[in-house]
Image (cartoon, rainbow, N blue to C red):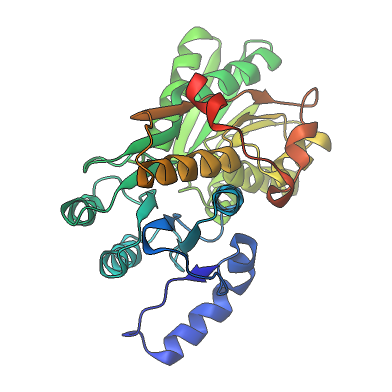
Length: 336
C-alpha cells in the first residue's frame, strides 16, 4: 500500500519519524507497494493515529474490501497521535493528489471542517467513518451507535457489581463524538443504578499510557474503586496495568472496542467485558460505500453499526486477527 509523503519535510525529520513510528506503522500496514489503478478507482483512507489497535482493524477492513473490489488505497495516519496539524497537512496533500474518493475520520470534529469543505468544493466524494465530523458534505456516514455501546457495557458492569459500588470513568478525547456519546451512555446507566457512585470522570485521550497514569492517580485519591468504565479498550488495558501494579486485581474493568488484545484479556479474566466497536467491519462498509459512490450506485446517507457486549461467553469470533476476517456482504449492510 502507498502512504503519504511530504516533499517539503526535511529528510532528517522524516527518518526520525519513521524510526519512532516503525512498530506502530507495521501494525497498521502503512508502507509502499500498492499498484495504481484507474484514477477514479483510487481511495484515500484516514486514521487518527498509528498506535491504537482499533485503527489497525479498520485498516485491515479497508484493505480487505478494497482488494475484493479491485481498487487502490493510500493510507494516511499522523505520526504524532491525534495531531490536528498533521492531519490538516494530509488533507491538503489529498486535495492536490485528487483520489477518486476519501474515507475520513477526524482527530478533531470541528477543526477539520475547512479542509473537508475544500474537498467538497473540488468534487471529491467523502465517506465519513468512525467519528462524525461536525461539518461538510458526505456521500455516506458509517459509524457505530456509541451511546448504546456505552449504555450497554455500563449496565453489564453495574449488574456484575450487584447494583452498588464506586466507579470511575476514563473518557476519550473531549469533544469527539465517540467519547462524548459513550460517556453519555455511561451516565445514563448511572441514573438507572442509584447505588453505583461515580467517583471521578477524567479524560485519557484514547491513549494507553495516559490511561495508566490517570488510573494511578485515581487509585491514590480513591481507596476503594470497584469498577472502571473506559471509553475504549486501549484505555481499559492501561487501567488494568495500573490496577494490577497496585494489587487491586479485584476491580472490574470494561471497555469499548473488541480488539484482539482486549479479547485475550477477557479470555484470561483480566478484563470483564467490552462493547463491540467493530473496526474491521467499519473499514469494510466504508470502503464499499465509497466505491459504490464512485460507480454511481446508491448508498444510504447513514450506516449505523450495532454492537454486542463481548464477555467470556461469546469472545471466540473476535479472537481472529484482522487479516483473517471476512467483510460482510453489501446486501446485509443495506438490510440493516
